[in-house]
Image (cartoon, helix red, strand yellow):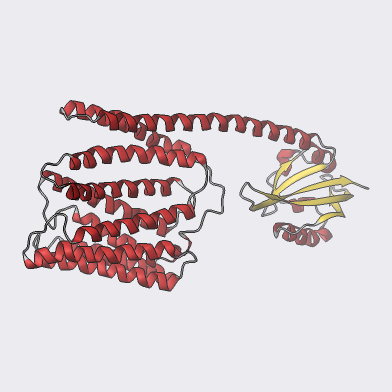
Length: 435
């Protein structure tokens, strides 16, 4: 396990070092092209080794990712090595474009499989992801899709292929957002995969911008995004936590709404901000698209606010039920106390005070053994172990010691206490004096 973690980090650092070496070579040279292709080949090899070594229970995601990168490596040969090595000018669309589009299709399919496996069915998560994804999608649409569509001199096929690239980026960003707000464990493999997506998108945006401005060149700074993404994806596949990446969360996820509010607010404001920037720059507005995006985001925000109002109402109902339950426990004639997995008393009702003589502030924080005669400690410890193992103990007679040192006969009921996720967090004891 430790060795495979080391392989993961060593591989990542090696590719980062290779990236630094890449930019030391002459820009646009064949040596640069070969280094880039070599680094991607190393990533593909690392992925194959990682999948074989860790054998994930749900391998479809990883196999699709590997297929996407194998196809992508062919694309780099056709798009990078061939024109640089043979000094030929590529046509558009060319032989590499179907390969690239297939690679992107496999990548999007892989992430869709991962999202389906990991994401919760929580409506709030889905709405949050949709709001953020649509905001980012609108920015992508205006900055890339519309500008690409407006390019002059493109044949219909060339225009369709050119637009397909940013559309795949929009899909990639949307799936990444859904992963970020969904369920599942945030393991090292998860974060490394996220960094791979960020590097890929950053490089794609840089590439699109240089193409639209007519300043593209091989070996440009944005190539760093593609290169470091090789490091992140290869390291993610080699890391042992990749086994559980496709596993759904076994915990009921608590929506971290407060941390998402800035993202949601920013996403909701992207539409008006883009329209304002376009107006300031004198850019021709596509009002149909602008209004459509803004209206859909607005409706999703309304849906989210509606859900929050329902959540608040339900929260108040739960609090009322909990308050009633607490009153019942506090008013009980029986001694009721709660304790954690270490046997430390965490709650103490009035009945316990009457039976044992300790005030709540005297009992809470002390170990339950304070209530036991010396000859009953071993028995109680065995009962504690059984309860924390989830075993049903039931009712039994025993002895307890009061604050003033009296030994009393009690009828005891032990029960396990579980949290909202079903995990055992302690137990409860109900005792009745039968002296």
